[in-house]
Length: 197
Image 1: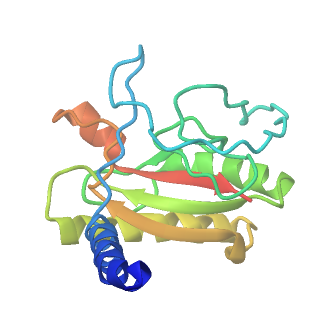
Image 2: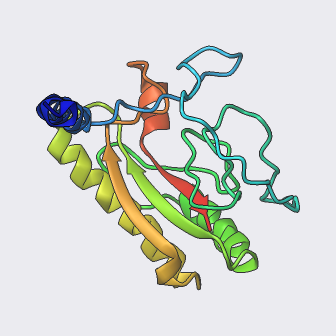
């Protein structure tokens, strides 16, 4: 008797089990929590970081080099690296409660961001819309999308090419600060800029 024929059904069963487990694992990603100053907060990322060399960033009035500040990747390293929390070359902007209207402070920050983007023409940006934890998941996903689009649209009016900007909403799923305080809620109502190439 040929043993390769008798082991084939067992090998197929093991393969089916592996594929089934992989399919079950594809659930929703847990919220990304940024560590608080002083080393407190979420655990460090467990994914391996790419070994792509980091290009130096010229510092300026609205740009600072990103060091080892706990980000999951470098905002301007090769590829489409995405960071959790703050610390990239484009600072988050904030929104008022239950609003997607840009504040004067947000417009001022976006004007600086547009200048940076015009001097870094190879950068591509994903504008992430975020909300605080109040409200339903569906409502916050819609509000996060409105915030991301309002931010993108304003950058386009400032001369940034629309094809360099993508929007995504995370609603209340990725809070920057998980506390249930007014200060934490204000931090979480934001548009975040994930910069890549």
